[in-house]
Length: 175
Image (cartoon, rainbow, N blue to C red; front, side, top):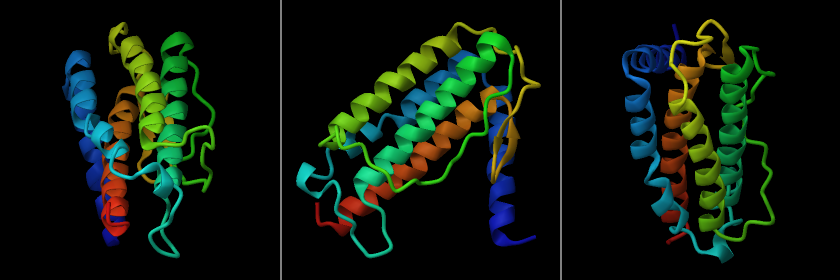
């Protein structure tokens, strides 16, 4: 087993265990509280540096934010779809596209879009019983098949990973 495999297995174990142990209210509260620092991260990088890459092989903050939005939007649609009709979603992709959203000229605008969509999802999740359609899976290329509850917790882990990345970009740019 490689180091990467063992880390993926550790994260998967956390996702499965915690997502199924917590009540829905506790799961939603955890996701909300733990991703709240994204709001502060949105203000770290001034608009004129949002598209600047700190290094040749680094992503810009705009690219990272776009990736966060893409995973947030895909995950929200998948979870809401499962809760609505019990059908598996299309394949989701957790890969950075290199795209940006030109209509957003600041981190705060990226965060506002993220927060609005995330709250819509969390409001829907809180209306669920919590045990419906857990056999319907969302596939992640690294963590395998996850139930909608597990994917919701994955979204938290994903956001925290990219929060650290945004903080590192801000430091590298001297913000």
